[in-house]
Image (cartoon, rainbow over all chains, first blue to last red; front, side, top):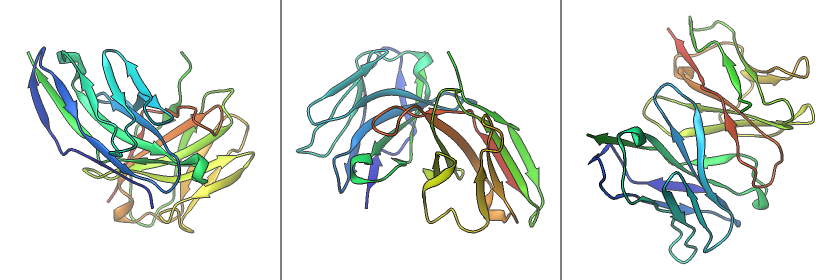
Length: 114
Length: 114
């Protein structure tokens, strides 16, 4: 079956630090990969996505590259801000493999201190 | 920007009672989903809905659960006889197409079963 594993949190960083949140996946088909972000009190919002190997998704200074050889989709940002504090979810969609739903990781709580 | 809205934001119910969670998806979207997140655990897929019928459901979505699109705008999740373990955050989502389009999530309904 499909699964997503991401690093456990919370991750606490100082403002302007470099961020990496690791994500690896297992899929039977040819998944698309996503990062969703959940700010306090809000729903999940799509942050970025990549639909095939070697694609790089980017948004709001965040980047993630679809690495098929390592089955990874690590999230990075060069300089984090306090406003980036949120829970980040890595997810995959295996619709080409016939599955409708997204498979999520457990989420990583990111705390940015001023 | 159009958004998915969910009501109520918090529902408290007694074990064995029926609850209905309501969602208004984005108006031109065709695919609808329910997910849940038990506190501290993964976001889990429950069910997807298209063309007025369930297209896929997970093992969690047993006979106690049902979904309906009663009037062309609302999308509801009913739990017939709630159990303590149904306590979770329930997220509704919608998308315009099935393949690779992002899901737009609502802010969720926190269901507490006592």
